[in-house]
Length: 126
Image 1 (spheres, rainbow, N blue to C red):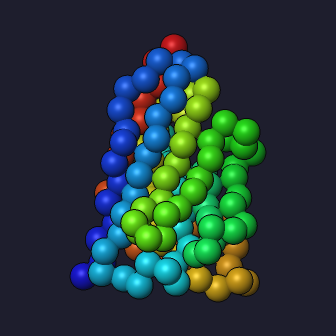
Image 2 (tube, one colour; image 1 turned 90 degrees about the horizontal axis):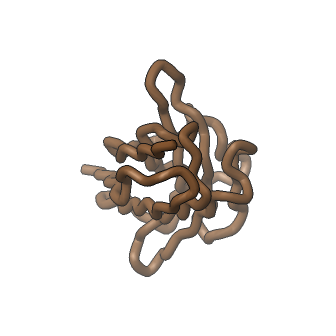
């Protein structure tokens, strides 16, 4: 059974930083591209960042580029989302997802992801 688990969310002041972590079990980690998405109240889930199986090809939503950084440690089977200069509009539940690698896949496409975590809440106060 595949399990995707996020951690690291919390409450932070505007301008602060958080690092989210995500692990996945029950799958062959190395063949999965990993993505972060978020969903704010009353809004659709949206793409935040993603990274290819080998750590290459990181992509970011325009709203977070330059502030967030995605990375992965394949030895530890963890993907990270480093979030800096957080803004109140970053407040959302953040989800980690796994997509079986295919170079033709658009990492921003939420429909392509096979497995999802339960999410971790990030709240940024002004």
